[in-house]
Length: 471
Image 1 (cartoon, rainbow, N blue to C red):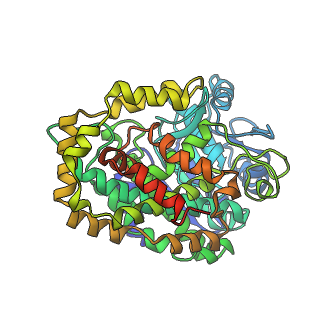
Image 2 (image 1 turned 45 degrees about the vertical axis):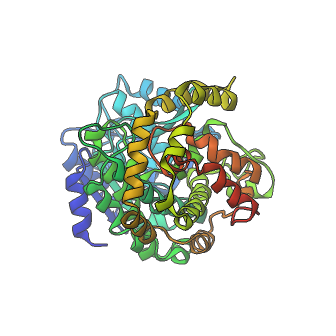
Image 3 (image 1 turned 90 degrees about the horizontal axis):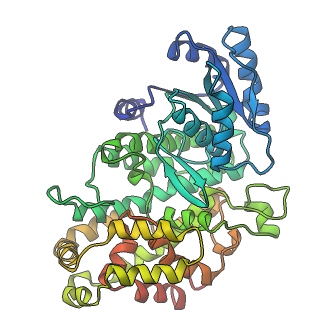
């Protein structure tokens, strides 16, 4: 990955104006801040850990430079996570203070400050402390609000600083989580390839986008960024730098998609993320030795797996589904039989009510499924396009997908969970998640093709009865 590719991606970004990824650059934060926010003073927002590893040093440097506007605001809740109640706390604390936020942390801190800053219509800066997820540079924040985990539209940081020394010293499980989140771009890229086949400029549909330059921003350097999972686990500076760059590029790609709608995360999120979002919305937690290893709060009995670890299990599940797709003779698809069996919207909403009735997920699933519903005529047109273009589309997908066994090996090598039970998900629940995850997003993925073509039951049964997900 070259500096030129980073510079090119930064030019396409609509909100982030500056990115620095180097070793030993915390002492440069005041200079960068004064250049990017002239006449402004800053306030550090961190949690106790991120303040200790980076925030305190930055705080002292800001004071020396006369750039401290307020004392650091430390979020010390032991159960701190990306929930809207913490956005409100940050927003309400800052609203009467003329300061520019400096988020010092990783996924949770950045998303909370991002959303709060957006609501205050303020620019902000982020100093990354771990390569744990791809949301640093994205124009959106994945936050739970009233039980629903959704991507809230908000502006990305104007300035991003990543000190490789700090990131390399982060807990290995945080790096493993980020690696798994980046690895998801392999299967989300395949989902985008399928969706792009269906794009119709004259009759655009929600969740179906053509390939744009954002595709290349994410995919062109992806193989290199994922090439050394062992090195990433061991804190090798080069492997960490490549991983950090890959994660940042995903966010820039999402920024460049803003013309397709606020918070569009197509370049970095597909069916694999729908598994993670589903489990978030179900408030999934687990206990035991695996929870202590793979949970967010290692000192507590009840754990929530990290975003990257949930996405990693979702990536394995969807990779397995792609391998079944690639073995299926799509050129023989009986389109008329699929159209004949296509359930009405009323029938689909009834199915959703059976799945989610009595839960806070229900209205969200109803809205998302309604948004992506197509008529029988539109379904016939979509399936015809895929069937007619299958030889070339199959070739693209084969080049895109990394085999299941190799995917599992790499995730294991970086220290990420590779079995659903390792994050507290049973095989039965994983199987049901193929159906439930399909209902909570309007984005077109392999799950939509399988469902619309009438293959979903057959493929899922194969995976769990005799395939790689049997357990």
